[in-house]
Length: 419
Figure 1 (cartoon, rainbow, N blue to C red):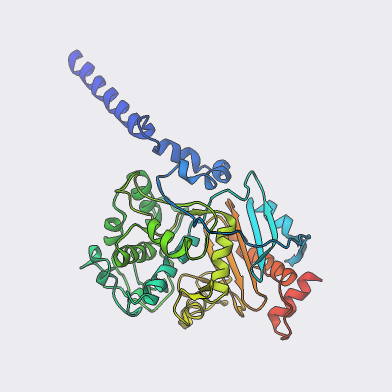
Figure 2: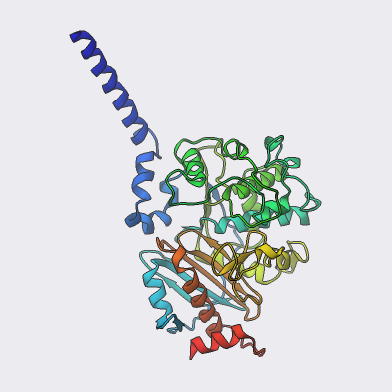
């Protein structure tokens, strides 16, 4: 009996040692222990500016001929009314752990602020702002003639999804976030599907396409708005299949170089090295100016340097609701906003749309005022701050942008906010 107990203790000690080795991974640059520490709320500001130290990645290089956007800084304190309180953009930034804020007017930087240790060279993670980059690559593939139309199925370009419910889903329904999939997108629920997907890809290094291919449809596609990150993973697989390359390399060739992005960037992946797969539903890391430049590209209707890079009509289609259930309003699924094709649309929109990521990442475009706003943050209360964030960005656009002559409700509200 004594020998049995000694043997059992030895086995348990060996298992504990093995578990500790797996958790801390002293032989690796990345470990679950580092991820756990880095994702604690009090570490998010630093983590979001240094995601390459926590998760594996593949580099995106800028063009050697790239030039920075022009500066015409006119920074002042911009105020607005929220609820019963008078607020300033500085209040909003401080409360939301904003790390960077940039405003472009007619393509020039008119406001530029960095906070909490960030600077112009910081490559801040974008989270789901990256979804809009993936959607843009789908549009570029259409412009190149590699994709005929959005009603083609995902498995035509990503055969690894063949025979699955996702494989049978059209690109249109994936872009609309209307794939009809049984998936819980709740970052706070311990056993939600998005948390399991994150753990599988980021902790266990599993094949993300394989994980997503196991998700099943529980209702008809094209009938409701249900935001599902896995939809974008499938679209990223389509992009990889169309161009037969890694996502980071495609972003470099199709977006970074043509748009003259000035900063190094990177896209996080599931494991280190050449066999790593990009986490396609998020995880682009770039400078604030390059996020703003991407918004300017959309403001210019997908034309850059005199060359049309997106199909005519794409920007208008992608940045407006494509069905009644995508409209913003009192009955919308997501408060204060609706959806297009991987772009959000605010309440009472009139030429306004935005890209958004968890913890408060934004790229806001106001077509009427010729304004682009890029913002990075580590806001743990981002969900409850959506309404104020929209009001704050509208106040910035009203202050720095072109005057609007039409007397719409939105215009009057913006003028009232400015006093």
